[in-house]
Length: 189
Length: 318
Image (cartoon, rainbow over all chains, first blue to last red; front, side, top):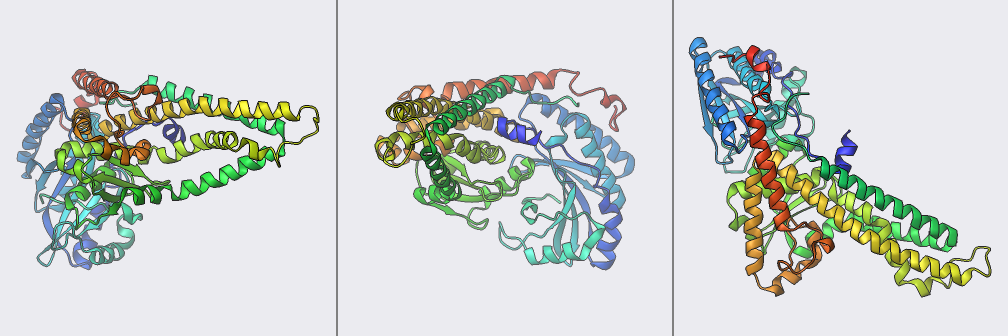
C-alpha cells in the first residue's frame, strides 16, 4: 500500500528489524582477526523518545530492569541523552557476544512495548590503533555500515569506511545505498 | 497488528481521496470537451504537458536559485546536518541535500521531484530563532513532504488546470488553427463551449488544488509529529514562525510570496486571505490538530492495553 500512502499522505513509521543484528556476532572474528580491529568493549542502542510523561516513566522502568539484568550478567549499563534529544543505552562488557545479546534485549524490550519504530541505530565500537571505529546497525534497513569520524566536527573518513566495508565482504549485511550511511555524532561509546 | 503509540486521521485521508477523485473527474470531463471540440485542442494539451514536464524537471533548481539558496556541507553546518541525518534515518529516507537561504524571514521548504534529488532548505532566520527541538520538528515536516512526494503530487494535480488556464488565455489565438471537426454550423458554438469549459475547469480545479495542498500540509504536520514523537515542538515552532511573520515588514514578505506553496508557512500577513484561497491551513487549525495528536498520544500511552500482553512474557517481565 505504499502508493496509496503516498497519494493520501499517510505517514507510517518504519518498523524496526532485529533479525540481522546477530550477524555482527559471527562477523566478530573476521573484524578482529582479519581486519585487525581491536574490540572497543562497548556498544549502544540509540532511540528517539516520545515527548510524553508516560514514555518517560517507561524509560525509568526500563532503566531499573536493565540495572537488574546488568547485575546478573556483570554488564555495566547506563543511559544518557545527547544534545539531539536522542536517548542512548550504553552497554559495557569485555565479552562481545554478551554485548550483542544485551543490545538485542534492549531493542526487543522497546519493540515489545510498541516502540520499535523509535529505534534509530545500534553502535558497536572498535579501535583501529587508537582511533575509534563504529559499526552501525540500521534498524530500519536491517543492515550494517561503518562510521569513522574524522578530526573536525562534521568530518568523517570516507576512504577508511569504504575499505572496511569492502574488507568485511559477505560476512555482514552491509548497507548498499551509501546515501544511507548516516553519520552518528556524539556517540557515547 | 501491534498497538501503536500514535493515532490515525481517517477524516484527512477521506478528504484527500475525495479531493483527488473530484480533480480527476473534472479533468476527464475537460479532456472529453477538448476531444469533442477537435484535434487542435489536443495539440494544446500535449504542448501544455511538455511545458509542465520541463517545469517538473527544473522547478527545484529554479526555486532554489530564485531564493538564493546555497547548498551547505556538513563542515559548514554540522548541527543542522547532524539533525537531518538522524531524522532521515528515522524516516528511512536517503539523506536530502541541505540548503541555507540568507533571509531573516524564518521559513523552510522542501523541493525536488524524487526522494533522491530532494533538497531541504531553511532560512538563516529560522535556524537562529528556533530552539533545536523546534528546528528538528520543522525539518521533519519538510522530510515528510519529501517522503510523500508532494512536489510530484501537486505538479501532476495542477497539470490540466494549467492547460485549462492556457486555453482560456490564448483563446482567440487558438481559434486560428484549432477546432475544426465536421460540425460546420457548430464552429462558434464549440468555441464558446471550450472557453466556458476551460474557465470552469480552471476555477474548480484552483480550489481543489488549494484544498489538496492544505491537506498535504496537515499530513506533513502529522508526519513530523510521528517522526519526532513531539507534536508540541512543531506547534511551538509554528507559533514562533507566525509571530515573527507578523512583525516583519510587508515589503520583505512580498519578495517571497510566489514561493508560498513550497514553504512551511506562507509569507502573507495574518488574516489577509480567506483560508479557501490559501495553500496552507490557518495557524489555528494546524495548532488544534497538533494538540489533538498530542492528547491522543498521551491517551494511547496511558491505556494499559497499549503496552500489550507481550510484556508479561517479555524478557523484562518484572
